[in-house]
Image (cartoon, rainbow, N blue to C red; front, side, top):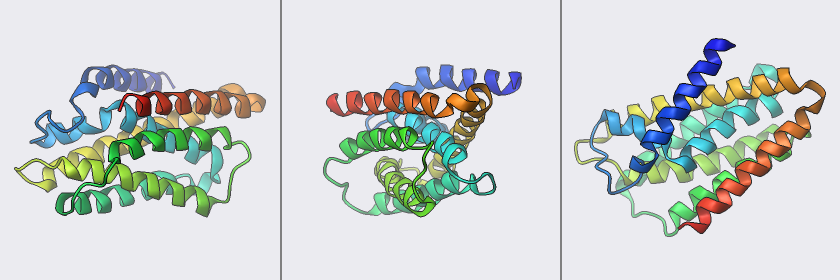
Length: 196
């Protein structure tokens, strides 16, 4: 648990330093930029939330499905984003996805059917993927995509760790803890939306 805590703290520090570089106009031109891209606050919060929700709302044997669904939808929509015109209000949609994940965490103690939750994750991941794809560097998609998929998977893993810690530390009050976290996440999404 100490190693997990240190790892999550390191992720938080790195995300703070890199958040301003995660969107168009910051020279996304390399593997390193692909690695940095998901550390934008909207992406970071959404990806952590997917991991937390997955271990909180899905059966233990199926907790991997949330992150896997997100990653699959992310890469497919990122490929579409490289060839198509960007959707209007895409960044607004990404911010709203953070609010959606906040609502999902609020409801995680009384989970929705897994198919609905995974469908919402896929829809939100598609918005994030289109945003990633629209920012593909001229040097090519492969290295950039490898970078953002690697970071996304690491953030999901961090969310899984947080979800497991919430389950262990709060036990009977897990619903209150998830609800509080979901409310904070929803407020962050609303703030991000208002900044656009």
